[in-house]
Amino acid sequence: MNELKLEVNTTFYCVVGAFVIALLALAGLFTELNLSFLARLQITLASVVTIAFAINFLMSLAGRKRVTLCNQGLSFFSLTGRRHYVPAENIQSIEFVNYVGLTITKVKTQTGVIKLLAFRVRKEQQQRLKNMGYLA
Image (cartoon, rainbow, N blue to C red; front, side, top):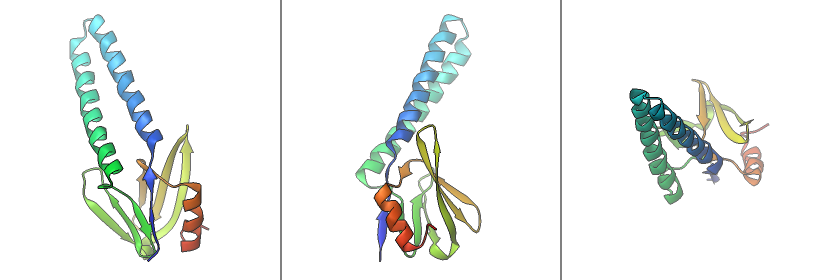
């Protein structure tokens, strides 16, 4: 079996960190403007996002969450932590899209599109995907 594990997309986590910092900065501004409800809402949202992505990042680095492509198909974890498996017969194509330095891997299947944000494919791995028949 030819197995390919995608690596952690650190750019994604940097973008999420910048989003959290922006939320906290706006919360500080709203606190000064006596809009405490909005400030509390933003601080709560920033805290939840930070905790969720910190746990996700640590689990990804530890190898407990990973995306694997092989001859038999695609194996990945959803945002809720459930493991999903897509057989190779259901995968139509794989695309790599860049948005402002953030690489998104789109896996088109018969039932829809799976977008992978937290994991990315290196250039060497793209060649292996071509050899496995996923890329044209």
